[in-house]
Length: 169
Image 1 (cartoon, rainbow, N blue to C red):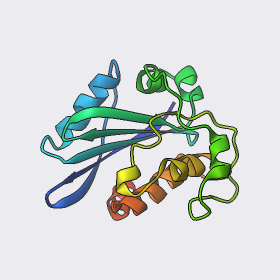
Image 2 (spheres, helix red, strand yellow):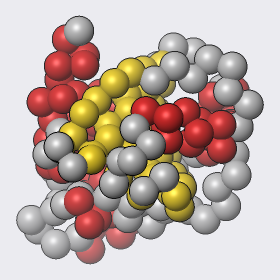
Image 3 (tube, helix red, strand yellow):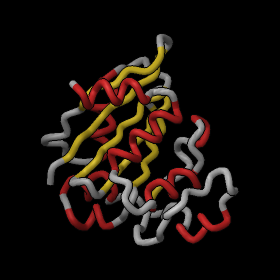
Image 4 (spheres, helix red, strand yellow):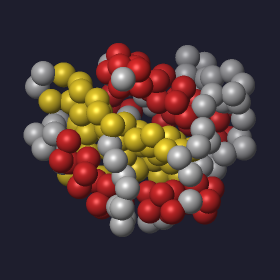
């Protein structure tokens, strides 16, 4: 499986993005260690892992601690080694996609379908402006690729330009 892993870190001077190599990682803690190494003093560190235009995993560290993980679909853990190491330890499911119908109209996304089985902490970006309902709706929207979801999320949290520059490099 091919993947793209973008680390986005926020320190005093703002957001910065860089590609992260996940080759040879043994578990999600080792992935978190590599994320910490990008900017050890970062207030927030996010990692967006897109795999085969099908799956998205978001990891978050605050001040290098308290790892939080969200995956767009639990099937990723069953279909690849990378998916298994990123999502294998997650026991609690994300909010049910059926809850999207109860989302406030301002957060509803047209075309949202409940085919995916998201897992983990869908609320991990809520304090940055992307609610659980919005994240789940984006992941469930027919026709949106993981790269589109990453771009939309990063635009909402204020690091869209950094991600765009990283992809263009």
